[in-house]
Structures are given as structure tokens and as C-alpha cells.
Length: 106
Image 1 (cartoon, rainbow, N blue to C red):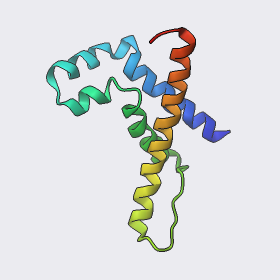
Image 2 (cartoon, helix red, strand yellow):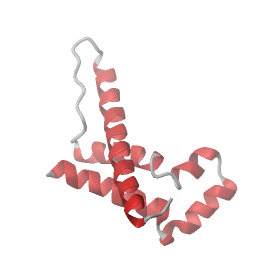
Image 3 (cartoon, helix red, strand yellow):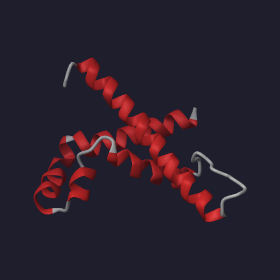
């Protein structure tokens, strides 16, 4: 149940930043004055959840654990958080796609 709450938290935070009216000035600013990374980060429903997912994984200590004996510990930690970010990004994109399809938007 905690994992579902984490997924919905990442989705909610990402949707607010990428689509919410309150963050529209931030998106406009980054589109005009910022390199591509920040521009896409504030408007991409697949990019932002990756980073938010890593942050949530760090804060909750509930990432997808990678523990391969043949890998050094730092690589296990790196892959743990990269895979967690990818999982959150994928599930958030899935939820977003379902909502867009249900609304009838393209």
C-alpha cells in the first residue's frame, strides 16, 4: 500500500508542476530563459517523475533494491535509485496516458 501511495505522490507532484496553473510562470520562464534540461524538466510528464521518484526514494528509503554480490556497493546504490526513478517515471507516464485517453485529449 505504501508503494501505491508513493506512486500517486510522484504522479501528483509531477502533474502539478507540468500542468498546474500555479507553475505556469515557472514553465514560461524556463521555456524562454533556460537550457533545454530545465525546459523539458518542467513540462515533461515522463522526465520530471524520474527525478521526483529518485527524491521520493531517497526520502522514504523504499526504492527498488539492487543488491548484486558481483557489483561494488556504490554501483548497487546507483542502480537502486536509477531503477526507482525509472519505475516511478514509467508508472506516472502510464497513469497520465490513461487519464489523457479517458479525457479524449490527444
